Image (tube, rainbow, N blue to C red; front, side, top):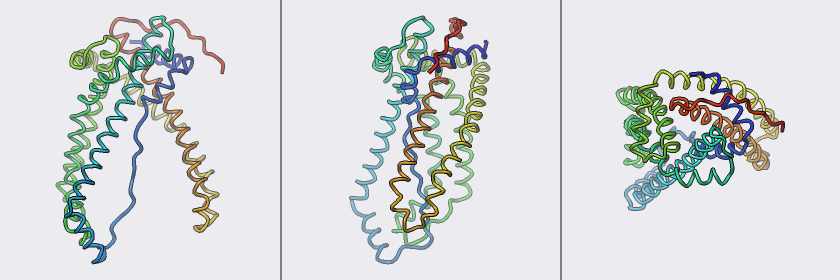
Length: 314
């Protein structure tokens, strides 16, 4: 297994065929994470406690919770389908390149229509065990919050029990280990689904065959790509932080009263940084997907092309 040739060929494909970046954008698409910094420092006032208790005991509370849960599920499905569409197109188009065929937008669209649902189901089935494990690990940490809700926030939510923290820590560590191995299996199953046109069940079986027979090679390539990802993060992270500080720091001199007036500018800066990181991520996704597709082809007896690709000057 010539890992250097795989990386070189994937880099050549990524740089020359920039149409693939569009599908890399879809493959790397992810929902934004919302974080809250709100903390309860003291119980709510009596009037607010009464309103919260009435709301919790009303049917509207269950309705809103059900709506939020439904919205989360729908969002996860949409994001998963978009990711699956991008991965399907990247796998198919890189394979077409190695077969000497043309890369076109219509070919990518055909790959999306033909493979997206099967690739999505492969990811869902192989990701389900880790998802359930993480959910089970988080539940003990939510018990104090549930108790505070039932009491209408008359008390400050206390810290979770030590057993809950241990269970959460062990569950997360186990989930990371199992998730890393299942991600390698998923990479092979996706390519079996797209390149060999197998149904979902047979794709997972074929992926499992490759995974068990070539686990060492897969782990080695995964570690190489992880090292590259860390390197990219270090190289790109520092300039991005400096750029953010250079753009945001002057706003601090405006004072609190003028921050609201500068809010559109802050939103514009945030949008600019998001677009920049998204563009970089689309290129990275294209490179990684190309590496794994070339790796899969070589495992199947289809050698990586050693013909040098002329890099176009842009």
